[in-house]
Image (cartoon, rainbow, N blue to C red; front, side, top):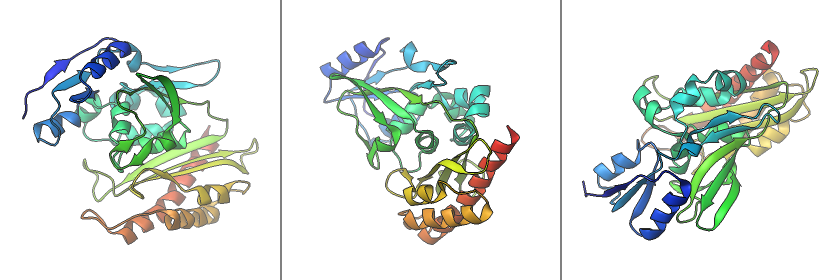
Length: 292
């Protein structure tokens, strides 16, 4: 492993300043569960690692009681989200995802921001945040800007972040009443592994819990970047949701996906799992709505 210098600023401004001084050879680091592996194995050879761990404002998990808006700091770990009763009760799709990321040790160190910025097609954290209409708050040398999570990814391992920019936090807008959400990480085995596909569904029904007023069907490992199945979502709007309707939505989502063969799974198998699990996650959403 090539030697590097470790910088540990306590403010976002200081981190951006350090990056500006060493921009050609510097990398930001959050939990370090991915970047340290890459450095050790020689995939990455930065001369400076700028740790963000001491920046307190990036570690906050706060829900505004008045507006219902949720703010998730980019340094919030998967374990913190997993253990939060608020996340478990109010954002079950996010709980489903983070509770199945890696091992306990990885969840204790890995951050939701790092999971997004790595931009791997199999990133579990991206799917629920897209379904929840999350917005990334970015800050860099040119100031602050916002980007919907669904637009954050350009290609595998590539995001819209400009040089020197930092993902500061994720904002989740207030969720409507009569909303249910669920995510499944489907793999070959229950033990720690990357998903063959990840499927997240969010449904909002009207005040009588019958007609669908909002639908999100989000897929991971179904395209080069996390995606929404827009045709399937549109199909659900205005309909009474039942098993038959969800089967049709699952078929549409599978057809819209861009799955491919890989050493871990065949494209046809991934499509079949999308068909099955869109239905199952949709039914789970209905169950959650009915039990509230």
